[in-house]
Image (tube, rainbow over all chains, first blue to last red; front, top):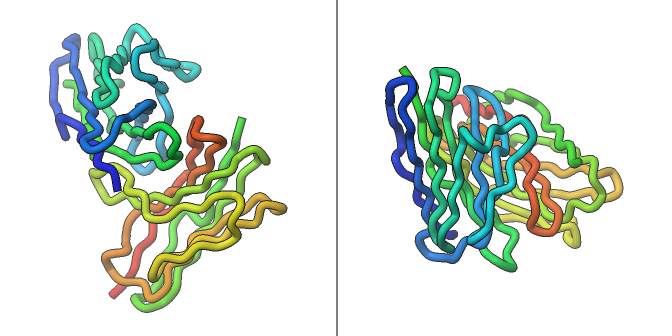
Length: 115
Length: 111
């Protein structure tokens, strides 16, 4: 299957700082990337959908100014958690699809801990 | 929007037995149904999928069945092994758009 690389796998930061998470499709062009948030023992909660070269579409309740998403190329999307607070601590996962193919492939996830 | 329900939330089976996880969906426009396996601290991994024009699909010990009329689909794992222990998620999607996930099933295969 297609490979989606996500970095970093874990990050610890101080409250008030910003953290950037990268998601790369290694062997295909990802026309659409999705960002999810997952709390312990819970399902995946869709945060936003991003298409290359256009603004991300955020789900209801997700602050777009806090969770900045950039999809500058067909192989890279980034999620920046700005002014992080302890309540932002969570497991963030990206996923990607290629044009004309409905299969959704996930990155390995990023565990964010805000102190 | 689509609502995907998944049962059971936890499932314990003895090694070698079969495991069945069931999901229902609400939107008749959904036409693609993948299943994912997630191990602790990792991202979900696609293990099998099925499209709405097919009733059943099998890949070695894993099979998925779909009943469009009843709007439900199931994952079947035969001859379970300890390495099958993980959390399994079903999902539904319509024409490559949003993917709606079930709440997950924690499968424990006892040696």
